[in-house]
Amino acid sequence: MRPEGFVLTLLRVAHLVPALVKGGGERAAVDLANWQALQGHDVSIIAGRFVDEALLRSSVNSGVEVKYISRRGGRIRRYLEGPIWLFKMRRWLSGFDVIHAHLSFSAAMLTLVGIWRSLTGSTRPVLVETYHAVGMPISDYAKTIHGWMAERRDAFVLMAEDSYWREFRSCRPDLRIPIIPNGLNPSPPLARSDARVRDYARRANIDSVGQMIVGNIGRLVAERRPDLLAGALCSIGRHGPDSIQFLIVGEGPERDVLARAFSDAGLSGRVHLPGSAIEPVVPISLMDLYISLNVGPITGLAGLEAAQCGVPVIAIQLDAQYSTGAGDWIWSDHSPEKVAVEALRLLADAEARRKLGNQQKEYAKSHFSIESMGLAYEALYADLLADPRGPR
Image (cartoon, rainbow, N blue to C red):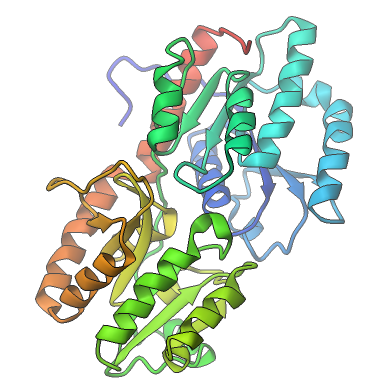
């Protein structure tokens, strides 16, 4: 609910994303745009390049306008066409109250908008970036570039906080750097007997009868640390019963690396890599345990969806300075081997899994809803529009 005395002003908001694909940052942007449109705001999504509309475009509400910077070509083309497109559309863009960027390509484009805005001497539209790569092992050079761009925003939002961004934040008290966790508009959980779940299991060659299934959903790229996930799953496979199977949903350049790690561990016949899923709730509904990647107490969107479906979640901890506390809603550890030990404990105890799943389901729904995220951004937008400081 909005705080007492809060007056809702309907705004024009544009969300910048690299493409409408099934990444966590892109999905968070689309869910936020959909929620804002339902509140009555005039919302647009600007995607850097056109991709298969079945990936995420079909999830965009009809009330949200979608524009593409590049209709053909790949990632390099959108960087070349982006500045030209922004210049051509500058009048249209100037009519927005807020331009909100998500992920690296969009951050670069937002910087160009900021330069243009400073040349005009205007404070509108206000510029907001949500940084979705907290905790990811990106280079110091990339972090420096992102930090430089962050100082040229009206607000730089972190969806979580690791040691690097914690220090960055503390050293810049004059910058608006709020922490707003991602929220989720969850799909209703499905039973394993549901026709969509049975069909998915058949196509993925999964025999779910009498089997325990440990899973994860995410892009298979190096910065998502699939090596740590493989280490945990291989340890579970080596020390657990043969009835445990593994379901890793996603695509990316690290897919073959993962497959090779499982093959070397003698687990190829028990590991399923079916590629991306249009509806994550379908493979989640096959899982008995979900292993996520956490940054501090914050987990990814797929982990949130698993929790909201009642699937118990444990995690590999990416923040080297973070230690799991008694109050954490998701148990985590830096060591893949220790994560495997905790996974085997839960897999051997159905009642412990049921209890943990129910607790996490209630916590996720009350703390990481799309409404809580949407209201936080509404309040941030209102604050920025009332007190525009402008980028440096």
